[in-house]
Image 1 (cartoon, rainbow, N blue to C red):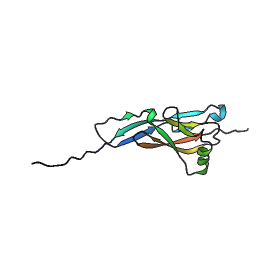
Image 2 (image 1 turned 120 degrees about the horizontal axis):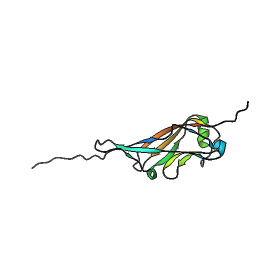
Image 3 (image 1 turned 45 degrees about the horizontal axis):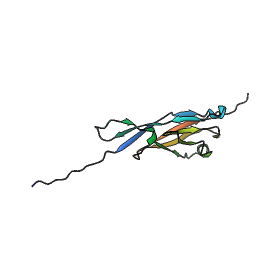
Length: 131
């Protein structure tokens, strides 16, 4: 008789999130919230699988608080005007309630399988100048 064993491994999924690298908070000028949507590609470690675009409805976003106090003030200034759901899917949302910029705001993007990636945004905030 013949005997043996078979090892079956589930392919591991990875996520590659993409979006704008920098966002200008023009809401401070015109009162209209600024949105920056996020997209993502899913790929596995199985060579036969082609990468595919993640469905926006399956993406979730979470803020990653920066170490710098000025950046933390941007993130914590208001929950409603920070980062979160972007209609369907997720993205960065800024409003006039945010009163400063940030060199690096982190946004963790996770899909339904649990695969995740982190985007880093520079946030520009216009200031009043006098001449």
